[in-house]
Image (tube, rainbow, N blue to C red; front, side):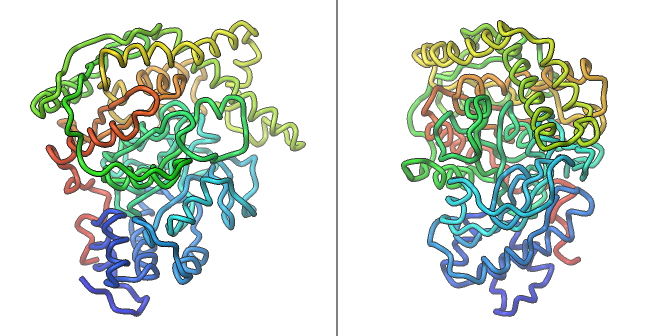
Length: 476
């Protein structure tokens, strides 16, 4: 397909371009088949056509994107590809409200090294994606708006906190979207929306945000996408040493541990068990050694540690509002305020035990890696929830149990600083995506991506599009 030099891109061409991943779109730019300006206009058309039903985009930066697309872009495997950024990322020329009414919609003047790496890769950011207030919930229903919906079923949540990113990529608005993950916030929406989400290990990317004693330990950032190669390229551009992305599937026979129970010892929903079973069978068919196992960690202690740190993060948000001269009750959501109150009841020993988990878990998982190269779990304990099931004005204790019960697997990697990737290998009988998660020891990102590449080749998902997507809209 050759689009004319005019920037008046037809909606049918925009939708066909949206079927391509970021690498393919960038390759078209390199071959001269399309310009970065035309890719940008095509993405804008898709967002304007699709976002009214999904509410994934919280800030539109069309003029900024057009200006960047017209300027000379640095070369790279993703150069010219459009993308979206999470509302919490500081990126020059866009606000960073983190889904909160407590922060202004004034534009940010400068970013941190991660934002600079996006520019150096030649990406074209079109705006910001919706998220829950300060990323403190696993669904994307901020009271400031918008409430984001799942493109597979608009009654359900796309997850969070990178929920707008997940919905945007799954529907085809842009091939790539930035996400951040402090308890699963990349992997959760990847599972809910049927895309690929990598949480890099601690220290595997350049600095993304201002220094913070908890966020520096828990949070990792990466680009979410529909294909493994896009995710691998997005990870590679942010590595401190600029190592190249892994190329091709894993050729070695790996030892894979299959772990069914959540950190608290719960059994997942039958759809998640089925997804796990099918993924294990597929890995065995590919020649890997697959074995049921249990992680050598104190799961309930790890679960409690993440909750304690989450309460402290909520309290930090309350304290920051006061420091800005604001009344927290007037500008913060009930869930954020409730976390702050919960933190008031914590003892120093609670925080000490949480940090002890951060100190202990890496060694325990490193020892586990002497027996197993990779461990396989469901990404989440149940399918995507209905909108409102975890709304921020819910009863706090119930909300805490609902959220961390659902996130029964993902927080472990945040505490341990190890990588994990969620893959869309299963769909429920109701047509909902159910992710499975591959995890490994510190420094195993390349191995996980190679394994993911092999699974993608064996059971492709690229042709599966949700009902609320560019699918079927080519003739609009």
